[in-house]
Length: 318
Image (tube, one colour):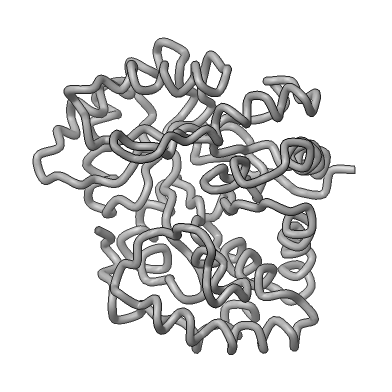
């Protein structure tokens, strides 16, 4: 029986499960049969959004997690129409490397002919041509290669600028902002600049909600974790013990507390996390019951003392 509800991405995106599975450092660390069973169980629970971007870069060791996903869904008997595929498009080589070329290679690797959602990677250069980028994205939508698109860790101003250019190009514009969000990293998703964008229909996809496992109880993560805006990771590691105590008082796990907190944001359409074990998936799904039992307002009050980036990060975003 499906237990994971769905919310619309933006104003014109598809209905996505409020929990979504990422592939960064997951399937390539798992036994194949275990991965098949996990993805099959996720779909049976109602999870329909899978982020399977290509996370390898020139000069780095080759990665295959997206290629594995194509085999996993086939072995699990999951039809393409039964899940939403989210891809990443990286901007480091753009526009010399056209978006279409990059996307077609990514789709070839994952065995699909379209992406239901595309998320643009971080802006790392001051001269990025947002008008041209918006036009290229509109072309991908018109060609049927992309259903809708969003951005990953952009500033609110850049999101608004890109949206204006997209509307001029005939695209609905970004439907989603993927942002780091956890009880410790709150300044950007909870800030006024993004609140204005959320009020205008852009959705929030919460990512890195457990800080690479630190907030779930792993004091020494065994895999690469994301960037550390504000240089607050030491404070986050210190906060993990207190969050675990709050979770215990609620008869919940720290992971459930983190996921439930991010779901409490009114703009959240989906929370993205990676799991490599069935018990992690089951545990994270339990966050839905925790949120219903405790309530959004109370959860936010309980984790208020652990807000580590309050004065360390500009709410406008990078």
